[in-house]
Image (tube, rainbow, N blue to C red; front, side, top):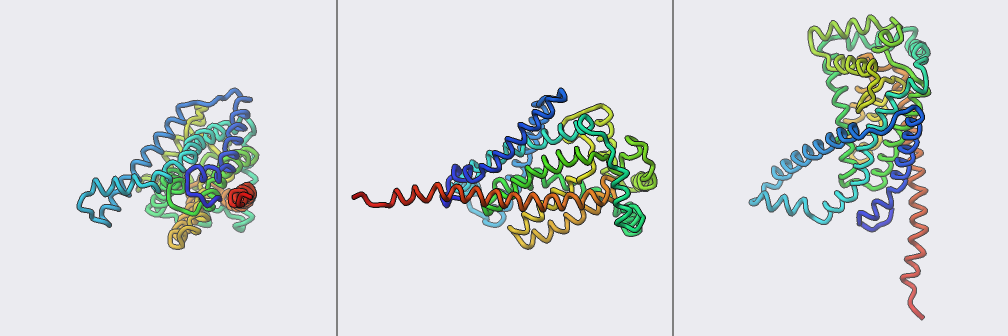
Length: 357
């Protein structure tokens, strides 16, 4: 990216992210319109509200941390000087387009996810069950995990952490939009993030349409995971299993043909695993210590997705492979764009430095 520190320079460097996002949004609108579904402002407003609340929460926590570290005599004056600096303004302005993309992305994804049955039937579950059994010696993946994880308190803890994943979408993404991080890392993260939701969560999920273990019986009449669901419901009698409530809500929305924020059912590939893996790829380049923490969280998310009956193990495997490919593709695109910018800047610089004859 150009060496200039203005927010306009950042916007110029992030053109590939904006271009890909807008093109994919347009494609989604066209595909949905072909099935009689059109953009709705309500999910967008709801998502904007969640980001607004996240910004307020992050700001409050950051202000408190700064005041505790610095202990200024005049907290109000100190905070004003700290947050109204030129660098802070540049970071805030520079992150606005990324925030706009984040606000739009999930509502579009939710509509596409809810519309999967309009484009393809759920026909892949039996195949993925067979793939899991091929990997785990004839057993379903959850059966292999059950001797270690099959205790209500452990299941409840994993269910809680599975819900914590949603913080990646809000405070996590806001960090990459507004924090002081390497511009190349920021752009690679956001380009991969947009591509992950659309290519993996949209195109691949439609192609490989499946409902997952928890919905196999109620939607497809496949009883393979009745024992797993029986364990989860029994565990819920002892310790609340948060994900069961979410699964029931998703099933109700599916039955009602709802397509609001967070609705829709799809198993393959796993977006929980995909986004957790993406954050690990990105965070480890920013901080080795935090990278290790996010690596552990990624592993827990993948294991939990199987234990809690959301996903087959192969859902996570396909997600990891796909995200790794998109991460590399994003790097290639960003590098190519930087070469284009450099080619445009260098002739201008030479023209401005040649002395007049």
